[in-house]
Image (cartoon, rainbow, N blue to C red; front, top):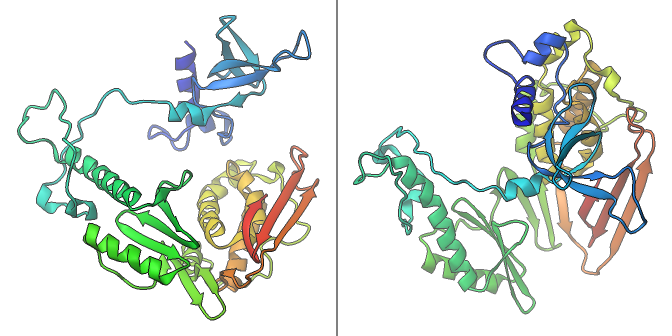
Length: 395
């Protein structure tokens, strides 16, 4: 049926050990495009071609069931009409489909090492939950190591969450590892990474109280002012109320990884007038073979990590170059290397926060109607700055 056809359609477009590359590439000589792949069975809303009245719904709730063979588009199942039809576009609710998915069975993992050989920070904490043993386990007296280790981090996290909530912290709804405690004008943020804690606040006595309470609740060591967090260096100028974040060490490793440590230093992440399109992608077998050895997608992902953390100045250039990961060409790779050259010149730059006490909100917006040469879609940019600090950016 549709499920089997969709599975075959997907497997033909992913790498396999049987052949070099993908079956689709072996058959057609072209790199497969994966951007249109959707989760089979997810809900989707498809626009109606005909409506009886102005107040009627403009789209129908359907389910994605596959890809048609004779034309471009998607196959949808309409639960009311109980029919399958083809449409070019739809709004797919893939995130909701994954969040609602549940696992109804537990798989016993293979034991790969003894308890004495395992070193992990979470093993120092108590295990407060009963270990689940599969029904087919022969030795019910000694559960598998893999099952016990899987529940210990979860138990530690639950215990930590309940403890800090009891002390007056509130968990951030968007970031489950970030907590906030407000007491009058004093604000304390607590960020948890595995079993490392980062405290941020605007009142030293309140921070001291929180650290004292944490040391009584958990076995911990105060490492003083944070100088690095997840590879990001932290600068402070308390007299001017300034804080700065830098990823110079990460950028050095990034340049070395892509053999750009000795490259020229670029002045801009993207040269003015640069025009990219899908037609510049690899088209001949020689170009495809050449670009196969180019780590284009890896470079895009590595640059994106720096952009998200401390380097919003390369957001636009990265937004443009990331569109061509399915089939990049030499022109696309040249622009990506220009971003790395720009990093080479500005690797010691850091993102600064603070410095102004008066509240001021400034917004900038712009649009381009010539960036997308393929679909001729406009691209909008939005940047919001408060207290001279950028807190919102969209491209």
